[in-house]
Length: 331
Image (cartoon, rainbow, N blue to C red; front, side):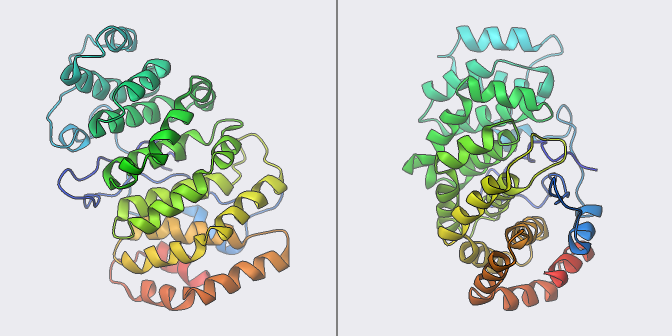
């Protein structure tokens, strides 16, 4: 199974859309801590898109796309986390070299550290979209498979800094930067206590605003759905979330017109199976509640927003995979 926390493949350097390759999936599990999977969700949990494959962080990521067309190879074999962190700490003004070292740090993945240095770089280069995106990618990669590092990242101020970028109107107009910002938050929210930090900071409302504002961007659509799903889905290997906490987050999505925004984005990307799968998973989780009245209210909201017609169009789309077809049919 593909890791739910690996960073995405790079963005297309020439458009606000993602390139045709598929981003790695996050975990297909939709289970809660207190009840078994429903038959529909069990079908979703068995597999992801058949064409999805987790990349090797060292070897398979396109550096030119990651750095907006700049070809950085990421340094030589002598590079290690300590030397990279020391360079970033002492050479913050060397912009081009900083970009190269950030890419190398990202490729080192969980072997690397320097989270505090990355946070400081984001603050120093808050007007540079390339370095902001690279910093988000590096934080994402460093913390991807280590929940303790996600907590350390929060304590180092990484989450608050990334949220600051998300809230900046300048970057809310840039879908390329938004994908890295939202994607990195979808990773960091798995750390103990981080979901509450994101929800309390109003991330749900801002992410839905960005999805609505960039409805033509498949990348923003996909990573926004992934983040929202991560915020409300309880994984067995994570600290237990009280049902009331989850319900509060779900209500925030609904109160922000989230269901209508998600379905509007689905209508624009009928031939994009990867984001569609995450949208379907998110809609499933939004209605899978302990309170049957709340579930019915959510389903009614989906119907009012055109959910049935959208799902029918998705079923008819030539790019819809068998797994996506089954999940959509069940919904």
